[in-house]
Length: 181
Image 1 (cartoon, one colour):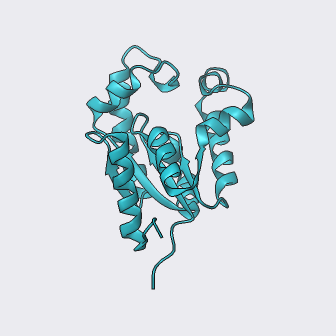
Image 2 (image 1 turned 135 degrees about the vertical axis):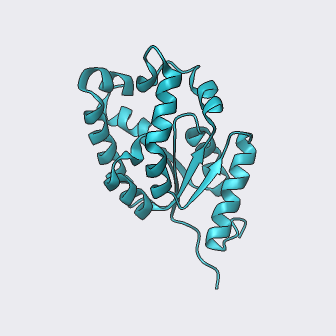
């Protein structure tokens, strides 16, 4: 008997790993809706993430993030892209695993630095040595990413299209599911 498709696919991973770009393409390929938790935080708070960090601090941002994740647990047929630090809190990891099949997207430190260095809207990297921050955060979050994920995909050497194919293959293998049915 064929196992049904996952209700949702949840993408976790460090900033610059491809969660948003790959998530959008995967949602389209699967016929699912795309949901970005960071975008929902911006919409619901009426402020950019960098403003929330600057005005209220990271802890307030993390509270907003947890509230958004809680609101998504009952979605169906969605690809949910989370912020890079969403897995820091155990309650978030638990909710995300309850929400669907969790895939951690990874990339090596050099690739991440290259991808995120062009973006000035990342509050944790607005410092004198963003490379050191990336390195430290990758190490400190590794166990949380592993605890959250059902599987991991390294996007370092993959195009976005190839990453989507690998993602769909991982889902298909896990669920013994053929998305073309």
